[in-house]
Length: 111
Image (cartoon, rainbow, N blue to C red; front, side):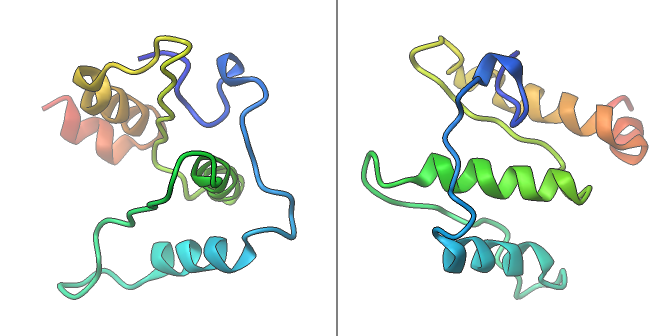
Protein backbone atom coordinates (compact mmCIF):
# COMPACT_ATOMS: atom_id res chain seq x y z
CA UNK A 1 0.00 0.00 0.00
CA UNK A 2 1.66 3.22 -1.12
CA UNK A 3 1.49 6.53 0.70
CA UNK A 4 1.04 5.14 4.22
CA UNK A 5 4.58 5.64 5.55
CA UNK A 6 5.34 8.21 8.22
CA UNK A 7 7.26 10.40 5.75
CA UNK A 8 5.21 9.81 2.60
CA UNK A 9 4.61 12.88 0.45
CA UNK A 10 1.07 11.57 -0.01
CA UNK A 11 0.53 12.35 3.68
CA UNK A 12 1.21 16.07 3.49
CA UNK A 13 -0.07 17.96 6.52
CA UNK A 14 0.01 14.84 8.69
CA UNK A 15 -0.99 15.68 12.27
CA UNK A 16 1.82 15.98 14.78
CA UNK A 17 2.33 17.18 18.34
CA UNK A 18 3.78 20.52 19.32
CA UNK A 19 7.16 19.74 20.95
CA UNK A 20 5.80 20.49 24.44
CA UNK A 21 2.47 18.64 24.18
CA UNK A 22 1.64 15.07 25.16
CA UNK A 23 5.23 14.74 26.36
CA UNK A 24 4.30 12.29 29.14
CA UNK A 25 2.54 9.93 26.73
CA UNK A 26 5.32 10.20 24.15
CA UNK A 27 7.92 9.45 26.84
CA UNK A 28 5.85 6.45 27.98
CA UNK A 29 5.83 5.07 24.43
CA UNK A 30 9.58 5.66 24.08
CA UNK A 31 10.22 3.81 27.37
CA UNK A 32 8.09 0.93 26.04
CA UNK A 33 10.20 0.84 22.86
CA UNK A 34 13.36 0.78 24.99
CA UNK A 35 12.20 -2.09 27.27
CA UNK A 36 14.46 -5.11 27.37
CA UNK A 37 13.01 -7.96 25.32
CA UNK A 38 11.76 -10.82 27.43
CA UNK A 39 8.75 -12.90 28.37
CA UNK A 40 7.24 -10.17 30.56
CA UNK A 41 7.56 -7.43 27.94
CA UNK A 42 4.32 -6.14 26.51
CA UNK A 43 4.56 -6.70 22.76
CA UNK A 44 1.79 -4.31 21.77
CA UNK A 45 1.21 -0.70 22.76
CA UNK A 46 -2.46 0.11 22.22
CA UNK A 47 -3.20 3.81 21.85
CA UNK A 48 -6.90 4.15 22.58
CA UNK A 49 -9.09 7.23 22.55
CA UNK A 50 -12.11 8.91 21.03
CA UNK A 51 -12.03 10.45 17.58
CA UNK A 52 -10.15 13.73 17.49
CA UNK A 53 -8.20 13.41 20.76
CA UNK A 54 -4.82 13.24 19.03
CA UNK A 55 -3.96 9.55 18.62
CA UNK A 56 -2.71 10.08 15.06
CA UNK A 57 -0.71 13.15 16.10
CA UNK A 58 0.99 11.18 18.89
CA UNK A 59 1.66 8.21 16.58
CA UNK A 60 3.04 10.49 13.84
CA UNK A 61 5.28 12.36 16.26
CA UNK A 62 6.66 9.21 17.89
CA UNK A 63 7.23 7.60 14.48
CA UNK A 64 9.13 10.70 13.31
CA UNK A 65 11.23 10.69 16.50
CA UNK A 66 12.03 6.97 16.12
CA UNK A 67 12.92 7.42 12.45
CA UNK A 68 15.24 10.33 13.29
CA UNK A 69 17.29 8.07 15.59
CA UNK A 70 17.19 5.02 13.31
CA UNK A 71 14.73 3.03 15.41
CA UNK A 72 11.65 2.92 13.18
CA UNK A 73 11.12 -0.48 11.60
CA UNK A 74 7.96 0.28 9.66
CA UNK A 75 4.96 2.58 9.79
CA UNK A 76 1.47 2.52 8.41
CA UNK A 77 -1.09 5.30 8.65
CA UNK A 78 -4.51 4.48 7.21
CA UNK A 79 -6.59 7.14 5.45
CA UNK A 80 -10.20 6.54 4.47
CA UNK A 81 -10.33 9.83 2.58
CA UNK A 82 -7.35 8.91 0.39
CA UNK A 83 -8.41 5.27 -0.07
CA UNK A 84 -5.30 4.06 1.76
CA UNK A 85 -7.21 1.76 4.07
CA UNK A 86 -7.07 -1.81 2.74
CA UNK A 87 -6.65 -4.19 5.71
CA UNK A 88 -5.63 -6.98 3.32
CA UNK A 89 -2.42 -5.08 2.51
CA UNK A 90 -1.24 -4.37 6.08
CA UNK A 91 1.11 -7.36 6.49
CA UNK A 92 2.65 -7.11 3.02
CA UNK A 93 3.13 -3.34 3.42
CA UNK A 94 4.89 -3.69 6.77
CA UNK A 95 6.96 -6.65 5.53
CA UNK A 96 8.08 -4.64 2.50
CA UNK A 97 9.15 -1.68 4.64
CA UNK A 98 11.06 -3.96 7.04
CA UNK A 99 12.83 -5.67 4.13
CA UNK A 100 13.85 -2.32 2.64
CA UNK A 101 15.29 -1.08 5.95
CA UNK A 102 16.95 -4.25 7.23
CA UNK A 103 19.02 -6.92 5.50
CA UNK A 104 18.17 -9.35 8.32
CA UNK A 105 14.44 -8.93 7.72
CA UNK A 106 14.98 -9.05 3.97
CA UNK A 107 16.66 -12.46 4.24
CA UNK A 108 13.86 -13.80 6.45
CA UNK A 109 11.06 -12.40 4.29
CA UNK A 110 12.50 -13.63 1.00
CA UNK A 111 13.09 -17.20 2.19
